[in-house]
Amino acid sequence: MARIKIDPAALRQRRAQRGYSMRTLASRAGVSKSAIRAWEGSDCGIQEMRLLRLAAALGIEPQALAPEYEGMQIDAGDLELDHQQLIDQVAELMGAIRRAQREGRPQSEIERLQARHREKRLQLCIQYERAEIIEAPQIGG
Image (cartoon, rainbow, N blue to C red):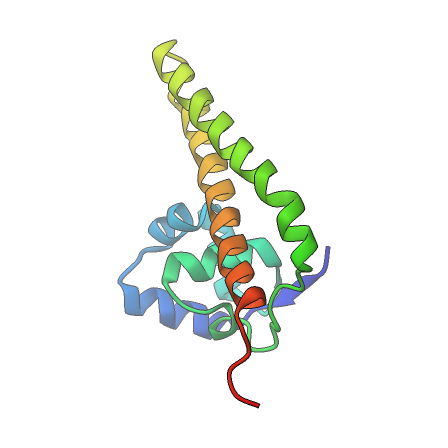
């Protein structure tokens, strides 16, 4: 999986503008605080899904953090194929969270399920957004 170059100064600036601590941003993006520290400290690469989650947590476009990022290369056929699977996974994870809570499972297990649930929901949102862009009629010309 290719890594995308992220601008550490842009990440620090956007996090500061939002008033987020590293821990808060990490929690909102579903990554570790040490990952945020690493990305803010050097011109290291980031996986595409993590870049998208980070940008979503900050309420910005991914290009604000990674100017060379050209966006996900998604085929509309792939969206249709994976869409129902993601919906099913989101529903299954919600059921697993509820069962874990009823059964009194450890909080760390519940939080791990909740993080996976958030990630799958984010993937669904990205698919919806990309599908609207792909299927939008061309205006003009």
